Image (cartoon, rainbow, N blue to C red; front, side, top):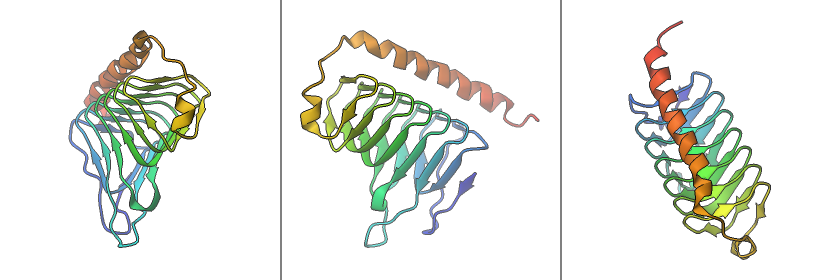
Length: 186
């Protein structure tokens, strides 16, 4: 469902994107080319700043937003998701938040009030808030990061761990093409 927020803002969605009919997109959202937004995802840009304005939720090209993902923002703050990212099933991205290109956010993870550098991997069931995740950084499953000092305790890993996230991105680009081809069939 595509709908306006109380300010009257409507999502901007290009023809090349696929939004599942069960997903809800509300308000000031800018969706990039070839984006996949899966079943029951909820993306809401509807809370405002004290002056009544709000920044958009921006989703870059070739991003996949999987089943049950929630993207929202506190008090009109921006959410910016770079290109070629995978936001896995039931994750929450809560602004203010800036996510670089080629980021993988694992199943059921939560990110809030942070900047995540390009190529970072946040594995499943992790909570990351109030920090700046460096480019290419890997956060193991079930991690709880509540500030920059917590990041210093995580050992660096081999860059090969990103191959999983790249394969997920490729698989979901194929889904966009497939669902766009059959979207008017019953």
